[in-house]
Amino acid sequence: MKKFIDTLKNIWSIEDLRTRIINTLGLLLVYRLGSYVVLPGVDSVALEAANANNGSGGLIDLINIFAGGAFSRASIFALGIMPYISASIVIQLLGMAIPYFQRLQKEGESGRRKVNQITRFLTIFITAFQAPGYIASQVTTHQGVVPDAGPMWWFSTVLLLVTGTMFVMWIGERITEKGIGNGISLLIMIGIVANLPSAFVFEIASRFGIGGVGGPIILLIEIALLLFVVVLSILLVQGTRRIPVQYAKRIVGNKQYGGVRQYIPLKVNAAGVMPIIFAQAIMFIPLTLAGFGESGVTSWFVATFSNPNGFAYNLVFAIMIIAFTYFYTAVTVNPNQMADEMKRNGGFIPGIKPGKKTAEFIDNVMSRITLPGSIFLALVAILPAFAMIAGVNNAFAYFYGGTSLLIMVGVILDTLQQIESHLLMRHYDGLMKTGKIKGRSSTGMGMVG
Image 1 (cartoon, rainbow, N blue to C red):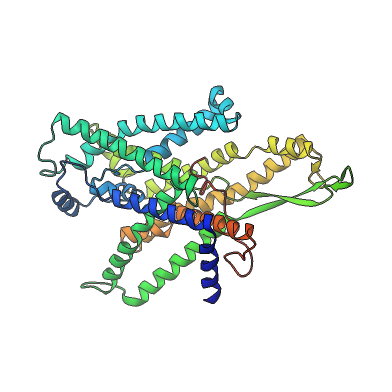
Image 2: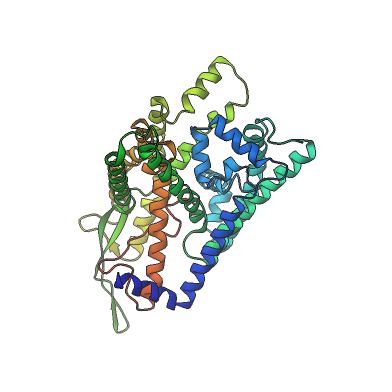
């Protein structure tokens, strides 16, 4: 306990780190307060009663978790940061196929600013496209929620939703620049964590309340299993395969460079949560199709793939995650570039010829470690479905795996690693008494580049 208190004192004594933490907490508070500001013209009491009576369930609950509850409350931040995530994914895909975006990615800081600007404009377009669908499917469908849904109300509401998403995006960028950790990832994580206390209370009520089943034994088993899944998720996030690299000795002036052995850390899950986000973006299609007709085929498709507990949904979901893991790993990890850089700097893998043979070796290693990583990632993604089938309430079950758990683990580890870097840079002890936090890159589980 004394070590923990001393660490907090060290963190608070560093002015730059203290300012960054205060800025982060302040901006996150603004985001959470904004998620409770209901759209003008919407009767919040009627909307809450309609949601309680109808019970959204399925993918709607999942979307609501990422928005921190703003989605079901018809808040000005109802669409949250997800349109920006969608725009970032589109830009990354365009970077693989269109030479113009490939050139921008190689232009350094100026190219990055142009890509960010294009991403912002694309975010506006995506939000303007999603906002009418959200209003039609989640707000105006309930009688009495919007007493006067005229053309001006529609226009102002769409404009407010677009503005709200852009403001959330600005908050995320400010956290990244002036705060600690990756802002976009922290916004998603804080929305997820905000649902944890209420979900846990509901689970306790379901075990101890009137008509509750299981009692304390089942609750303790659930908590133990949750901790076990968290440990497995940390292993998935932190797992690496180290490839030894030997550098030749060089004499420059009176100094000797090289001659030491280093390692290339290849992540078992190099794609982070991006495969799950890709797959879930596709699995959201049934919600879109639901508003375009009620034919027999459409109704069957929507009913089958809007049920997160269904066999067909989870089978297709797991297969897509495995496929997207290989796809995204191939995009983000370039063995040829790594081999060329090693060759230029006089480095080589012992027993492997520099150049093409090195690139083939790295590619083979990545293929071998990606297979178990992708399967494990798919299993973690569908664990909430097994938890729901086992009797855990839907809200609490989402914390047993999937994007929610992986994002929380990845973002927390990344933020702690940045705090520890500030401490070590100023000659303080790290956050842990033994060992160091081997966090991911500052992109927060590879969500946003």
